[in-house]
Length: 280
Image (cartoon, rainbow, N blue to C red; front, side, top):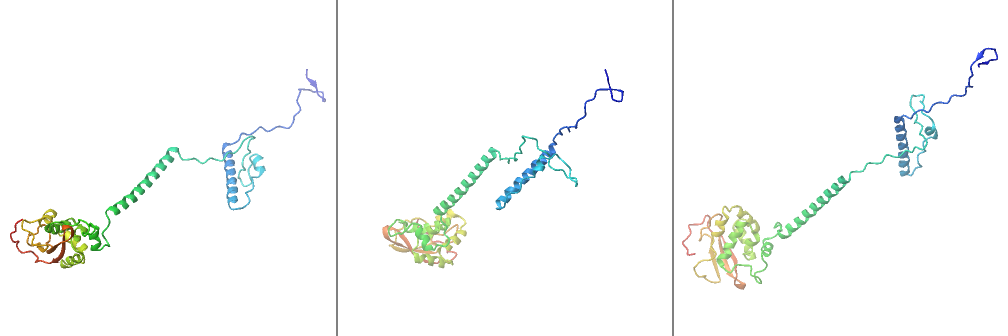
């Protein structure tokens, strides 16, 4: 039954009206990300100032964290309210994959190994095949086998001693060519042929060789004629040199341990006259 109002009119039962409670607004993900970036920026400022010896940057205003989103008069939005129990975790820097790190270490190891092998190979090559530049003919001759007075480094045949000079010139071997001559004769041999020293003479004469085998074998290793003594002269023109330039006349002398050393040199006509018949 409807109750009578004070004015005598019927009325319905009405609950007293209280203050209205606003409904909770959902958090916009974009605004949440904006707040996270703002926090990271504040952390970065504190880090850089601490590195410079300054006081850390002030923490964000508490009102910015607790206040609901609101628009500034200028139109900008403040950072959104963070729900209870939510923590901002700094974005972790991505690390390179393990296989990429492994591959990088392998590549560095291989590069270092190649560098070490290259250095070692160069040292070994220079050790076993030294460069002749900057060395005198006497030094090169001595390196070719030591001293004939104590070692068997020269030929025991006088004709072979001269033939070895031709063979060394054909192969461009300075110590083997100059080392067959006495030291004073090495310089005379070069000057007779128009060169500064024995080393230069061998290199330049080698360029004129057109047939290495014929040139090296033009001079015989021995002849059937008896050796005319412990010192005599062997003429290049006597045997008709082929495949390269004739080198003149060499005087050979028997020395220690039955070896033959070239002790003199003279020029011969260029070109050589027709060779005289000899018995080989």
